[in-house]
Image 1 (tube, rainbow, N blue to C red):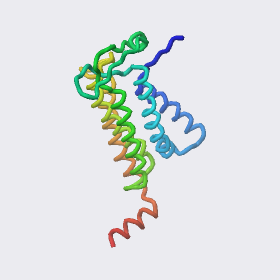
Image 2: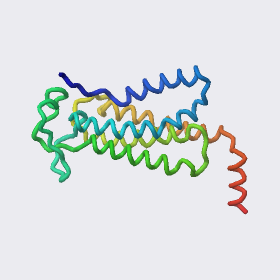
Image 3: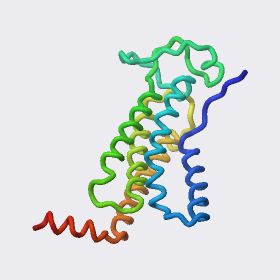
Length: 190
C-alpha cells in the first residue's frame, strides 16, 4: 500500500471558500455569519491536520540544534515526501498545530467580547493565521515555491493580512449596532 501526504493548506482554503460561497448563496444562508461559524472549525481541523503532517513527516522544518528538535527515522517519510532521516529538525508541524490551537482558543474566548458583527470571527482567523504562517515558514525545510524571495505561503500571507484588516474595518463600519449593544454602551457610559 502506498501512502502519500501533501497538499497546501492555502490551496485547500481557497477551494473551500469558493465551494462555501456557492453553497451559502444556493441555500440562502447569511454569508458572513456562516463564515464565522466555520472559522473555529477550520482552526480545529488545521490543528489535527498538522498533527497528521507530523505523523507523515511532511511539512518538516530546517535542521536545528534546539532541544525540542525532532528526528524522523521512518524510510516511508523519506520515500514519500523527502523527509531527511536522522537529522534534528524544527518540528514546524507542531509549531503550526500549536499556533492553530492558540488561535482557536482566542477565537472562542473573544466570541462574545467587543463589538460583534458578521464576518468578525472569520477575518480575525484570517489575520491570525496569516501572521502565524508567515513566521513559521521561516523554519520550514521542505521544498516549496518561491515568489519574490519568500515562500508562496508567505506571499499569500502578505496579501491576506491587509485584506483581512480592511475587511474587519469595512464590516465593522457598515454593520449597524444591535439594540442590545447600544444599551450596553449606554450603561457603561453612565
